[in-house]
Amino acid sequence: MDEQRRDEAWLEALFRAHHRAVLAYAVRRLPGDPADADDVVAEVFAAAWRHRERVPDEALPWLYRTAAHHVQHRRRSTARRRRLAERLGGLGGEGSSAAVADATDAVDERLDAAARVARVLEALPPRDAEILRLSVWEDLDVASIAYVLSISPTAVRVRLHRARRRAERLLAVPDPEAPASFARAPVPEEIR
Image 1 (spheres, helix red, strand yellow):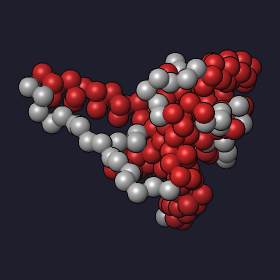
Image 2 (tube, rainbow, N blue to C red):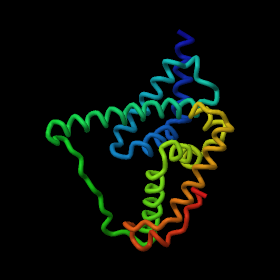
Image 3 (tube, one colour):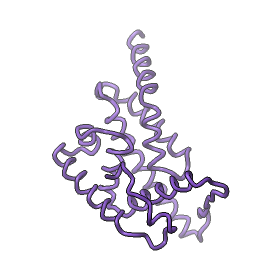
């Protein structure tokens, strides 16, 4: 029973230390429904409990890699449900849009910059977008990114360099659908 309490204390400490980081990771990758991100977090920590002997001392990259698997699974499931709904005559379609009516200029500029970054990430190949997210949003070093993606640190450096160059090229092209202020917005520091 003493071992059980020790394991429970370990999981509690792991959860307290990394819950917010794993939740942020999931929210940024599943922006539609906050409940989806919460479900991913629950699945990640349940997996940590089941595989506690294999969780390394530096647990965050392991948690991110586990979260990545659950996010991919959730996306596949969502896509299957959407295709089924379309086959059934479009029932359950999603079509919500949010508008900010009374925003200040500073908030408007931040939203434009965020939209610009989102468009660039969407235009990049998924591999490039994910490596940039891990580097910038999750603030992981090369070794941790290598662990999360199951590739070598050298491959991370090369992919990260290429992804940054591709993002810079995309940021240099004005978006014809963007508001005029978007075309003038400077390149966000986190992409450079």
